[in-house]
Length: 97
Image (cartoon, rainbow, N blue to C red; front, top):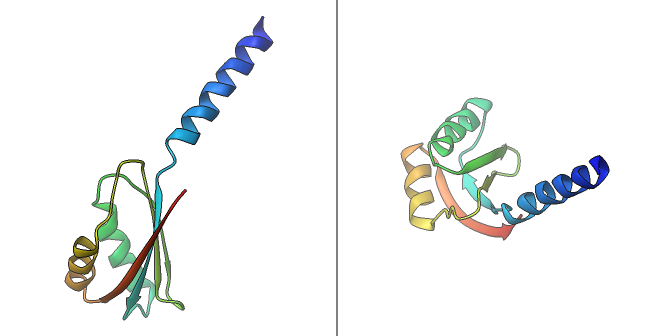
């Protein structure tokens, strides 16, 4: 009986994780040159509710952001965020996690 309960609990946890997937956004940004730049961007993105993970690749000028299911980042929102931080937003792609 304990094994059956453990298996059922594992199945429920796995299903919940599968349904709470979310979205990954990749943004091309000009002007990212140092770790301080990355920190500034991360700080602004963390203010957005539902942002789970942020990765800034300075060499490629890419900012990757994972968001929770139901959270959407928009082009105008990102243009303003990066402009306010002193960078030039170029483009954004999105894909499900």
